[in-house]
Image (cartoon, rainbow, N blue to C red):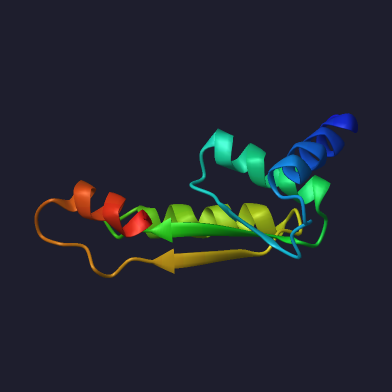
Length: 102
């Protein structure tokens, strides 16, 4: 990662949050965009970032994928927690998942 990018990110974050956060939680799905975001946040705020992945329980492989994300982040020194959503309804799953994110 370019040396200047974390400082640019930290500056942009300071404009959004005038008081520097003691800690920052970043939602990480395992996709390239959220992984890039958590790496950038970790570089800009070392020791003050935790990654969170939600396992909605909608796919059998989701738990394994969330675990793999955590393993990858651990190798980079980023704490990671998996949040499990146990309230998945039988119907209207996507709508309920969106509502639960709010």
